[in-house]
Image 1: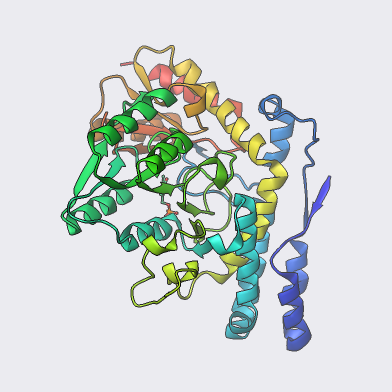
Image 2: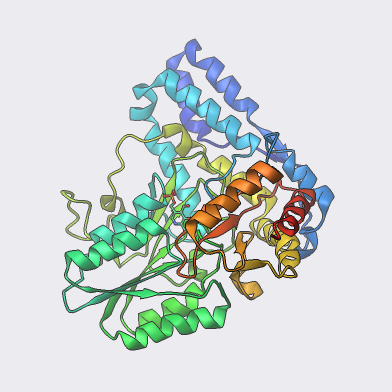
Amino acid sequence: MKKIPSTYSRRSVLNSIALGGAAMITGIANAQTAATTLPQFTSQSDATRLASDEAFWREVATYYERAEGIVNLEHGYWGKMAKPVQETYIEATRLVNKQLSYYARRDFGEDAQVSSARVAQALGVEQNEIVLTRNATESIHNLIRQYHKIESSDAVLYADIDYPSFQDTMQWLADTNKAKAVVVNLPGRVAQEAIFSAYLQAFDANPNLKLMLITHVSNQHGLVVPVARIAAEAKRRGIDVICDCAQSWGLVDYKIADLGVDWAGFNIHKWIGAPVGVGALYVRQGTLEKIRPYPGETDPDNNRLYKRVHTATSNFAAIMAIPAALDFHAAVGGANKEARLKYLRGLWTQEAETMAHIEVLGGADEESWTGMAAFRLRGETSPSAVNALQRRLEQEFGIFTVARFELSSGACIRVTPQVFNTPNELAQLVRALRQLKA
Ligand SMILES: Cc1ncc(COP(=O)(O)O)c(C=O)c1O
């Protein structure tokens, strides 16, 4: 067993206790109870083999509080904090609420720097290439809104699998600059090569493309887009790329270098499992010039990434808990988690594919797979039919999922297990799918 300490900056906390006296002692002592032991994963554990090791994942599951009464297969919204992360967060909340501005004005800056450095390290980039935000939306919206290289003769590109609000913001950017918006529509079930070809076709047909949005993992059906290949081709043609990594970081195990993009937005509250309210913006060194500072801010030398966001008062405790979330994620192992989630997906999709009345959506080859996937009753693509199906799954079968509506191929039910879901729960979904036959 490996000892993982609770990890918001002990130094700042200790500094404040030295200065603050007895009133703070309870907070510090409680904070230290957040220290915990995590399962130690042997170095020879191969992630694929470990994916079906039920004893191992049962142990991981003990680190999460489970809700009774419903099989929740909707973990794409945000991530459950593991118990050690939750404890760290609660203790950090107590500390902040007790010390207020005395902590925030004196020590929080240093703690936030520690959190931001940990995020940069986990993503394999320099600290000055990362700035913390409140969520992925803040990161990506700022990139799109503050990109200032579009002229009326240019075109921008987005796809039906992109996050709906970001499609709207890209369309807004085009409209505001009287530029053209190009939309790539992908089939509901698609493999890497076909995804790449669809983007390539759009590039060929629109030589005036200046900026594109690309989503690493779609929030509609968990499809993995071959970002590195597409971004390399975009770069060759002088197209700037904004990459949405909101759903991918922690669901898939990677570093930013694997994507080959200059600009990306993340949250830390989905698959990394930090408290809600923390995200990150990545801008590669030397590329700040194309992204204006936040309105009203200045950065004449274009070397201050933090000038691209203006987050103001935020959830201090959530930011302080980021290192604990990264520690827990690392202890489980990013590759192990990705493999387990894909394994859980396979437990239901492989059965569903044998059912003529079910259409499975998302990746058509394993490189395009994540733990998240989607389905619908064959031919039933309308939002009302899919909403009715979601209600039926919940009310008749005790399984909670979510309806998604943005794919050009029609609406679908998204199914997203987490590491603490069991094969029995996926079997319950499979039984329900069989009974959905009209
Ligand atoms: C692909 C994708 N992009 C962006 C977002 C927005 O993330 P956030 O809520 O952190 O702003 C989500 C959230 O579901 C998402 O799945």
